[in-house]
Image (cartoon, rainbow, N blue to C red; front, top):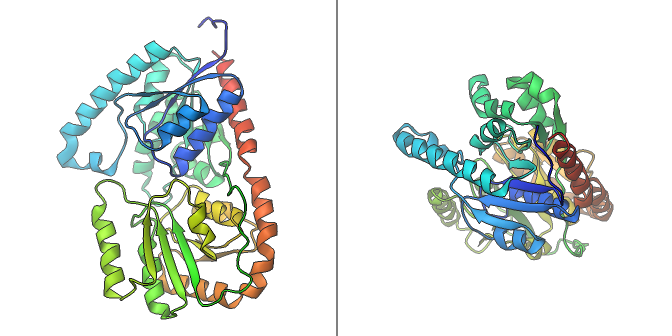
Length: 384
């Protein structure tokens, strides 16, 4: 049995990147929760990025160590040798980090770090895995391969009932001990009231990764099909490295449809609220399953109408929200109908937006998330 040393609890957080998208912001909230509880927190990252300054500002110690991060590129047969080398470097680095930090517990952020559950298990260090993944359409064999390392952790937290259901399809026993903790989603510092009248420009905002699975190209095609000159679109986000071709494809579509004056590619924004202020509607057109829907919640928090694919965790994120309009995923026709509905029913939807923003602020309050995740980790630490 490990002997507890005196002093504050010491946590190690393993995270796969340093950007400011959904799981990055949730991890940051976890760090804030632990530091508010007087714990010492060290975060190990494989790379630098805009997240680093926020972690340091919150009081965490940040270090950079090699890690095996599951990316589609590593799964290609031609990259087999590179994958083996990345695994070897990641294994050596994770063992070194544990020796140097000597944490009371480890928080593993996402299933894209498959070595960490195994390393903590063999080192007999309590660990909590926070699952943000949920691929309903994957085969059972793929699900088994993705989730198998989770058997090595002490506790599991999932971000939605949908995520837990997907885990159950591969490992029912792991799903039974997984706890659902909804993401804490911060709203804007001050809510900018939506326009009472839409006027000559109806601006739609897309926020997130520019990727085929997220579906911003559907929004461009819907804009072209509607032929309504009032409707404009802002795309707020950037591509993964290696997906530059997709941004080029978006730009080609915009040019082919002569939409250059009505579509703005604004790139990545660490603070999206100024861009959302210009919009009346936030669109989440995901083609594939989403374990949760941070962007959908952000749109509601900003007192905007939200158009959202009727699938997976996006349903949970918009459950009971009267100003959220769901449409069939991967359907330009369905998205066109949703946009038309929002424009034509604006006088009915607009008066409800403030109340829905208040309700979302209570349901997904960062303070609620921090309290829940801090409890999960403190209970885990006491098992050591």
